Image (cartoon, rainbow, N blue to C red; front, side, top):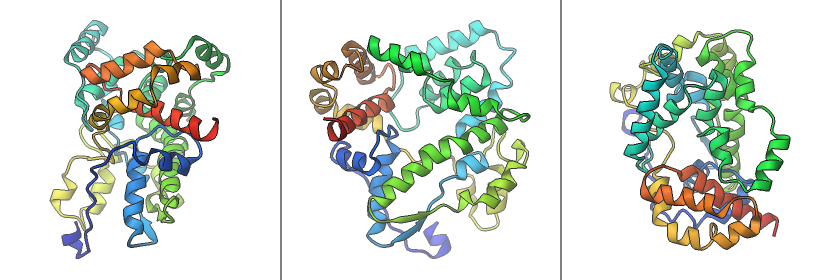
Length: 323
């Protein structure tokens, strides 16, 4: 891309101990933030700030133009209503037997999450995909008192509620609406804003221009995504300027092999943030529940990288702000 447009290209290769910058990342948020993309944004912002004070980012492109695989998953799920539930259950069991590699892009993990949620109503199904699991799966490691208190105050899923709010619209249009009102401002933009400002870098997000959002809100879902293609309208427009190799490239995402990194750091994690004595003293989770999550991740039977990272961040935040 840099060569195509005659720009200077700077490459950042991350070979990091993911725990070294944990405290600085948490301090940049002032609140628990469980997405590991925050750590990537922290390093990228620090790298960019060495050369510039203002930068452009593509945040919002996936939401506005339909780039997330989960949008295509909704399209596919629309055609699976005639598949017998027993066949879906067998396919899910087969994936669980195969295990889940701790890679950044795990088709087995995506497949298992897809199949596990097909029996749910569309709004709850989408909420499970965005949240990387159902409420019951997230509740499993809670201590009894924690589970009781959460049950007392738990409201319906904000994502599912937003998904069902539009008066009309197909599944992709409803997912778009839910993401514009939830995932984009509360996850993507919050992460970029906090981590960039931690290094004094101002980031502009042109894909979030309100005029563009208003135009795309009126566009049919087929302009964004089908079961086989994503970002259709953006690819058509950008084809005037981008080389075919870029237009036809598969989505890479802003991710990293965090699952493997967590495995490499497991001894340090269990000896510190997730030590049984620490878990017991906090009283929020069951010691055995946390140990099960760590063990399944180590053995490769389930990819629990996001849950483990969230637990580490929560413990670090409690040490910095509550202790």
